[in-house]
Image 1: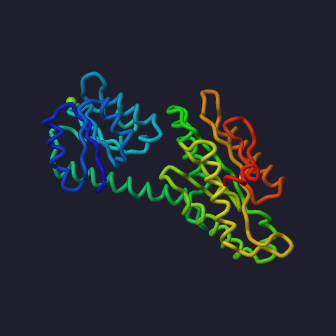
Image 2: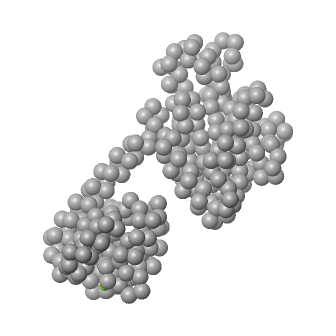
Image 3: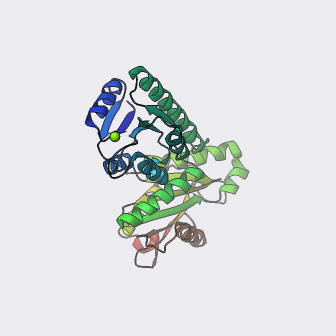
Length: 311
Ligand SMILES: [Mg+2]
């Protein structure tokens, strides 16, 4: 069931709206703009019904705040008001409201408008999802990574959580393609993507196909050492698929990985750490491939062989 948030200081009016909609939707009511802002930021609402006239923060101000936040920006907002004048309607639409309902409202009109905007929202989400999915593997694509990583990077900075980014690619992939052909190469890329996603542990662990035979993973919350070991495990899982590689290259298809863990500070930039992960990947290649190289939280480079006794 799609979720709707009603922000209205009048309990009576909110209850009336809730009654109209609660048969078809899961409805949450906030009585102040501040409360509404908090709910909107934490819940996955498909629509917000927002009263314009409220004490302290009014609906226009809240609408502006919702538009400024990445998480709430795309959620459609319908304004509810008795201000039936053109100016406030204009103002609301300029600020990004998708529609306007004026009081006193008719239940069927409210229902019809809400249904329309929920449908549009669902459609848009689906299109958006498709545009951020890699067609070959079904996992996230680079575009989705760009959005996800920045959101999570900010969140980790705000909450002072360790943030890890890992770049990796398939070893000697060109030789594989040259030997077995591109359709076979595509299958290998898909197999690596599946191994990766099936070993992600938490809902926030994220992986995307970055391009070609290149992947990127973002892990928030895990300590550096634990995350390093976690990625070593995934590297081993790929090796354990036992996909035969081209002759004179290696026995099985393998991957090299490079990564870094950091607690983002105010002056830190995600792009710089993505570059560090790429540098670590470069080193992993240089050290002989089929291994994980990490820039640890002690500022030292970690290589798998240093930890071979404990892994
Ligand atoms: Mg009011």
